[in-house]
Amino acid sequence: MRVFIRNKLYRYITISDSLSVIGDSIFYLALIAYASQLPDSIFAISIISLSETFPPFLAFWTGHIVDKTPDKYKAGADIATNLLRGIIYIVVATILYFQSGMIVVILISILNFISDLIGTYSDNLRFPIVYSIIPEEDMEESLAFSNISYYLFSFLAKASGGIVLLLFNSNFELLSLANSLTFLIAAVLMMKVYPSLKLKMSTKIDDGDSENDSESGIFASIKTLLSNKRIMSVIVPVALVNALVGCILPLVYIFFNNHSSKNYEVLISLVGGASVLGIVVGNAVAPKIMKELSIHKILITNLTFIAIITLILGFETSNIVILLAIFLLFLIEGFVSPKFTMFIMQNQDYNSLGVSSGAVNTILASVVPFHMFIVLSMMNIFGEAIAYSLVVLLSLAYVVYTFKMEKIK
Image (cartoon, rainbow, N blue to C red; front, side):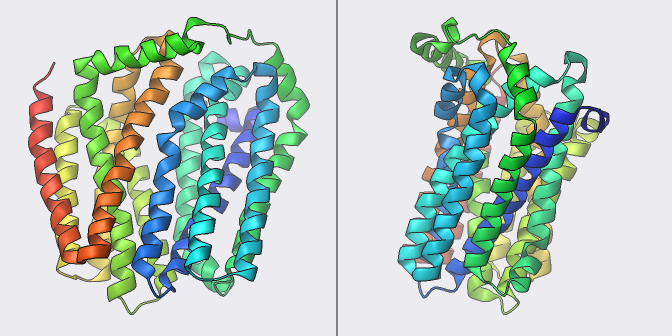
């Protein structure tokens, strides 16, 4: 908080990021709500959910582009990303105004994918920008505050998203314009501090020709990462757990659409709020209560809970039980995050940290679309029971695999 108050540049960047998070979070709920109103709602929700999984898969590629972007242009590139995303959602609003039905879901999913891909580039720009404006002694505090701000505003947006949808009377064109406005305001805020940011970035030494920036250096870093059995014994189980966790929310959205008579917009908003709140609380308490527990045991607990929550959906229990289960699932997911981040930081060469981190994120993201495609295809073709059974079986299989990986030192 001290860094946020004292450092004007950091304050503007944080506020800009928070606005983007709010707009993105509410508009995602709006898309799900729109899809739920279509005749083939399960297929529509599946398309939207899948489109959200691919941008993180390309994080390594966007991270590489960031590394290739000269430091003196990075602040300007960040402004450009917000402007581009603002324009994209104006186009989305136009499509919603003139068209309706499944074609709209497909077109908007493509545009939303492009926007999220630009967003991953913007996210990767953040580290070098923040690194240039924050003293080393304040770096840890600033990163912690940035994470808290992200999750806080994501929680507020998702928790209040249902109310916003009701206030807008589910006017999806207007919601798209509101999302566009958040990005345009974020761009204006960054423009206000652009001269100072450009000066700060220009004084940095451009490492664009370093070995790790070259193609050979990048692939060497990936090869080194993949050959490290200790690192992979953690990365692979985390990736598998993330993939199944990624399947849960679409399944819950579809469940509420098919089985609940309550207001759908409010329900999906509560689901989003419960998931983010669980992650926030999990991140906050993990260092205190999970210090002695291995990351593999936490992953096994998470997999067990994935199986339990899937069975809860299968038995069509009450909405309150489902929301509580969502909170607990993401609470455990929150336990994993700080331990995994620390593990990666401790087991990588600092000079290749950017490239290696991008490779790690790509590995984590690569299995999510595959799992989600299989599970949601089962849902669309064979129905809920088969999809739920598949998730339970995968959870149990991954428990056995994670037990084996824990033995690798």
